[in-house]
Length: 184
Image (cartoon, rainbow, N blue to C red; front, side, top):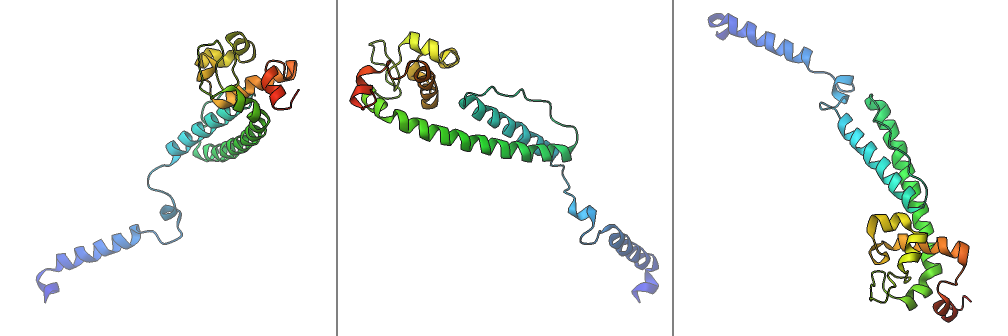
């Protein structure tokens, strides 16, 4: 009865159902698997972040950072590069953690007799290994430029400068504490 009174309504509803069925993709089709919003900006941000972290770990390890190239144009190559940068960053972080734990263990006794990592007692010696300003400028000039006195340096930077001094001078910059620790 409805079809006799309103034939155009039946025809319109059939047409709508037909269009919806044609427009709706089936499962497994590329149209459904593809995200509706492009993830490329997120991938590019991730790529830049992992590249910057890798350079941070390189710098902490005393290796020259690599200049950051511009992001790639295609989303697929950005995703591949982001995966590589993530793996590189994680590898460098593990290498840094290994270096830090070995170096900290080597300097633990000297540090325990010298002072806190942030100590600035006013006697001309600063930091956890008690660097004077000349020593800090000689063995950590980039850290002096960035943070100032050794009491403001992070622990890893103090250890890096101490390792540089140890390579050339041995334990002589810390004669009393090295003797107390049994190193001399």
